[in-house]
Image (cartoon, rainbow, N blue to C red):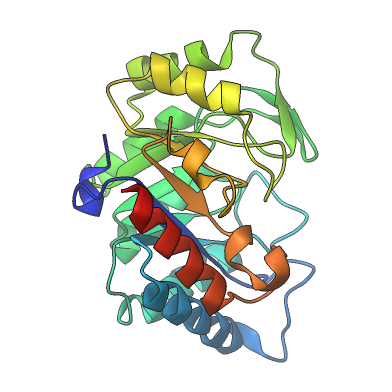
Length: 266
């Protein structure tokens, strides 16, 4: 099962386009400004597309320390970055504003994204404090903006956090589809770049049959065959970077080698 926005591509690969720190974030570089952010992301996007990925997802991964509530300046900047890059895209794209589901929907809807990813459900103890997203607000905003066609990808187990919900992960995933209308379920590892537990991925994939299940973190050329035994696809960022470092630029050769491997698995 795959997302229909990806043209029924079997074992789809969504590649991350990490935007540099946005205005207001501690790591933002005012000397290069938003134009510098656009220049850097465009270079990464061109390498990702040349390597054959199936979709691009824009994320503000560099806005550390992360926040639960977006700021006007960061939303405005991210919207401009995505809008400027959109003209260069040859594949579907999505948006993820960390860690604000409503901002993700707002940016995604206004830029014409095909999908958004976020933590939409659950309660977590996290590096940022107690984490309790408002799925209903984000979902209603999607409807208000006339974008019910835009898919909502639910990251079911948050990075940098521990779920305070004692239900098994497969039950939480199944519940998110039933009560919160998730269009896809994503299973993550404990931190960016680290893989999800294989048992978690398997349990969720077995429990959730109505929508696709994707591996959300830590997929690489060495484990992708095992991941695809259970998952409909994956989201991948760190492995595509120079030396496999999340904060480096995209390595075109890594992308090409990975996608060549994926083609043998499809």
